Amino acid sequence: MNVRKCDICKKTIEGNPVRAGADFFSDKDFCLKCGKPVLDFLKKHKLVKKD
Image (cartoon, rainbow, N blue to C red; front, side):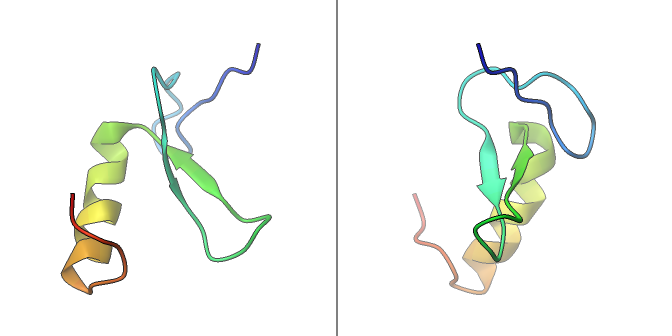
């Protein structure tokens, strides 16, 4: 079993994590609460598609 923890708040992530990174080996996992600002930034600068 793979247990994932948020790289910011260190809480166990339930469900799918928010993954961000610039490289194959530098991916970071965030919970939805901590990952929301990251997603908002990426959407604002049109780096990801909006849901």
